[in-house]
Image (cartoon, rainbow, N blue to C red; front, side, top):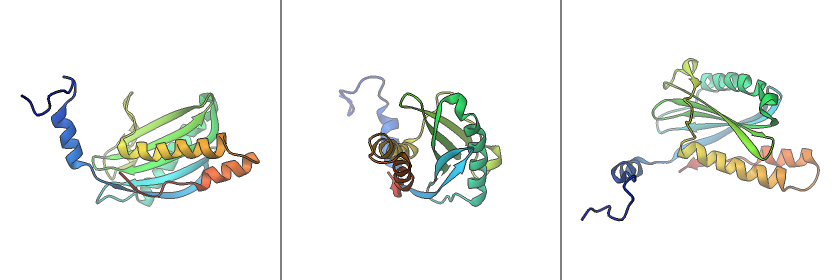
Length: 172
């Protein structure tokens, strides 16, 4: 009998176990909250072991976000966004996450080879955040709901609370 008996046939047990064996924490650093293309944007650096988000990486990510967010009105943007600059183990990634009308969000993902921010391009259709990026975005979903949607007081105070509530530490 297989050691993985009881799992559906589509479950690739060997691949899942290999991922689990290689899984590790990644450093997450909030960089700042700034205005980009009329949006208030929380900027994060996410770093694989041995990798660092450089000033050049950040500058290119901001340039990409400027172009993406410039179309915000056409996407129904509410003006609040998150930018993740990810120096990954297999390449570099930039995620631009924007809250839009109807309690929805818009996500742009850009990928490229490691340490070549000038080669970042839109990701293939269907690509979603990795486990580390998703943890940061899950935090951002929660603080958006807590502070902005469910918060009390003036909207400016609720948005300020959202801007100050950042994910810090290691992403698991």
